[in-house]
Length: 74
Image (tube, rainbow, N blue to C red; front, side, top):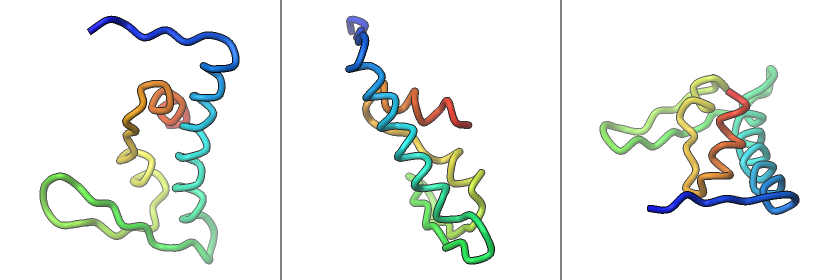
């Protein structure tokens, strides 16, 4: 498979979408009124957690550039 290259605004926008997706998922767990998040895994039963780190570790996005943006926040 050939490598995909993106430049300038197109690349920054894709990275920012990934960052925003990760931030929205983790933001829900923060603070004393943080909400529970359900993590569906390919194997086993779903996990319910309020731990933002566990949520961040489980996020993997389909678009490679969005995924890079999300992984930078870890």
